[in-house]
Amino acid sequence: MKKFQPQPGFVVQAFRFALDPNAAQEAALRSHCGAARAAYNWAVGWVTASWWQRRAEETYGVPEARLTQWRPWSLPSLRKAFNEAKHTDPRFAAWWEENSKEAYNTGLANAAAAFDNYTKSKQGKRHGKRMGTPRFKSKRKARLACRFTTGTIRVDADGRHVTLPRLGTLRTHEPTMKLLARVQAGTARILSATVRHERGRWLVSFQAEVKRDLERVARPDVAVGIDLGVKTLAVMADSTGEIRTVANPGHYDRALGQLRRACRTVSRRQGPDRRTGRKPSKRWEKANAARNRVHHRVANLREDALHKLTTSVAAEYGTVVVEDLNVAGMLRNRRLARRIADAGFGEIRRQLDYKTRRRHATRLVAADRWYPSSKTCSGCGAVKAKLPLHVRTYQCDACSLVIDRDDNAALNLAALAAACMTGTGVAGDQDTTEVVSKPRGADRKTRAIRTRRKAEAGRAGGATLPHQRQEEARDRTHAEALTLW
Image 1 (spheres, rainbow, N blue to C red):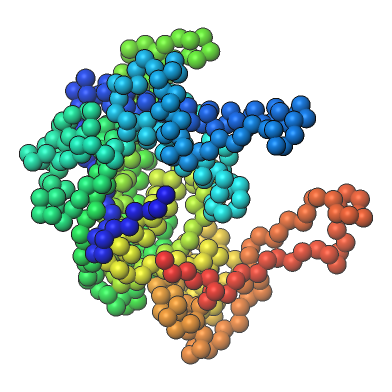
Image 2 (image 1 turned 180 degrees about the horizontal axis):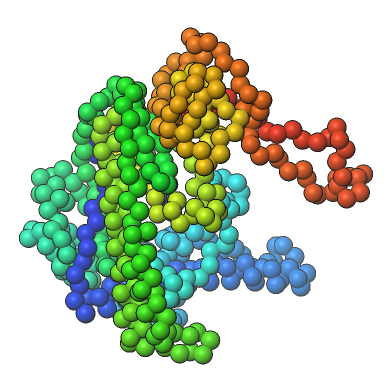
């Protein structure tokens, strides 16, 4: 299916509003989201049934030409098959008319996308983690969501209601004027609407084609390097030498006491037990809702703080340099995982990406993952071989510079903006400054590659001779590591 392309001068933007549905409307919302989940499970079962049938026939020696045909998983094929089955299938025949057709189309579209992602991942055409076959969605764990693309989708003129197909008019918890004003002015056109239950509230997100002019940044000629951390969320150093520090709010740490008391209350109530089929008590449900409100408030505070930080940075500087952090690997450290997750390193990178590129047409430079920003001297360019994490002050052995570790890393990242323009790949320009010898091993990774344990041909037990031992992998040169986003 061809991807939607906005008009020149327009962008696709989402506007999200919280809803305040009554009891009947909330039941209808849950019914639509449940219908989407049921349609998704039907599509997964319908497609994979042919796979299992073919596998069983192969065990009986059925020739290839006589095997059961593969069932297609394209969206038009799934729609056609589902429309034929919903009248006779006992899982849908009694109630499918109660919901909009868009609810079932949501589940079928998600199933088609899941099979496409699985196929591309298996063929090596999809980046990222290897994806398995689509699985059924659980009624207890599946996220409640439903998308509407046709029918009556509008923001009402009073600015406090929205209208959706089959659901009717729903009151919003907050004004919708930021979208309504654009629609009335003719600078926005609503494409679709998605309702979902998230963080204890019902939300509606309108996907709109919006006319948006590029906003000029306050300092277009200035580059800033951002060093993210746990104790201090961000240290920003620009090309003029100014250094600013953004403290880590630590929303989760501040809520730990309240969360501990809420969890203690929940543990004293009679909760559900799937083994015996016991249902939770009313007091447990009330205590669990109170505990969830603490988690939801922390998530909302974190999201608000990150948006304010990234918006201010993207609106001020012409070039932003960040590190390509291995956040998934950092979360494996059990001592720092909670604080790293609370800081939201990956979310900061994602928000800076689209805010610099789409809103201001500025540059976002990602330093290489192995670039030694903390080990490199921001004054002379010398690189230390080792710099443990507990050492918070950088002392250069070549030029005797003494500077905070995070400030030094931010200055080096800011210098990379000029390096990617001039062709040099270090914090100091090596073509104009005196070459400083690096200590032994400074240009190598700090961890050696483990030898293979798999047995090789002709060697019992996979033993490796001394002259066959692998050397430590060298870092790539910094000039090759820069990536423009």
